Image (cartoon, rainbow, N blue to C red; front, side, top):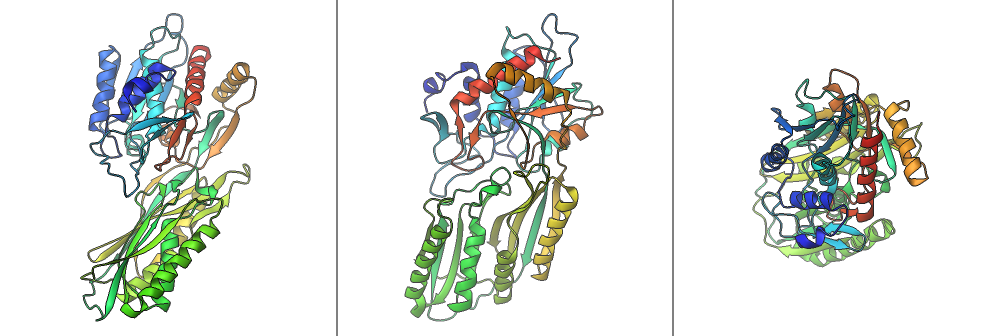
Length: 487
């Protein structure tokens, strides 16, 4: 989308900053350019700007005249984005800008993630910082780094960095919702080690099996939608073809990111040449079966077998079987629901990645839960499945949930403002995604009253990500009113 086109959207100041962000490659782990951009932005406007050792950038804006005695408000959003694209899309997230376009009432990206999560929150903060007409209390704008994988910025937040007592997190994805709590998470890393098998049966043929066209999406906020997991579907097929068609597995690659529901999976197998036609028929049967089972949830799952060159190595039979059985038997999706919020997921598991390479197979999973004890139980269940399969299991990247405070004074104020502005009550929610709020609270030596909100974003963590244009203007207008009236 041309710059002139995106600048016609309202509020123009917000969309201007969002466009600038789309031109800066900022996948998790590549923060240098975008943090310099934010730092230069603050300094160019003669605002107090500093960066901590973790890379987080803090910009302080003094209160407007007459607002000096009010509580300092922290605005917070993260700078990184999830790099997801379709396999047939040529895009390098480390150097290519995001190509955006207007599709009716939404802004989307061309076959990649858009980065509205959380680029739009960043853009709104930048607009507030440069608005010289806004009446507001003292503001601390915290731009955190590397949220999407590991929440490293929040964990590494400099002690004493923040002085504010009220915090507005701009990282939720449904306009009209005020979020007051979220789930915590733990990364599960599984590893199979083996010596490659170089003995391939004479007369065998090789096929590349490709599973594509799944929706994928955010492994927290969209896990309850029942979308297909490419790793689960592929291993379901592999179990059948290994058991009944003398197939051998040479390699497998499914999923890409721990916090994204896997959309694609690819495997290379060998099979006796005389069974080739039977394999093609079986793949077609599974394609029909997958589309039938997920009718109304997925649209257009494709499952294909294409003849390819014989591989040089195979995964040993015992490892192959252990992997397939473990992935097939591992829980996935929603595990439990919250009793106090019946429509909210309490615990879930995303079997995110299965990847083979020379002499090893890595399986990566993400466990989420609002309950620490439930989280530990789900982790233990996963460990049991894969340890029985002979794999090594390790846990990493654990982060706490954000415990809801239904008696929040900030929440009460924001509810009243919303009702007055829009003549309806906002929905107060606890979400199953991971937000930085709980971690930031643990790194601040005084209590924080925190509420999260934002415009409507659909398809986050997938190439279908889109942001509803009118909700950007509404959310930004709401943010400005909060700042004018808070305290």
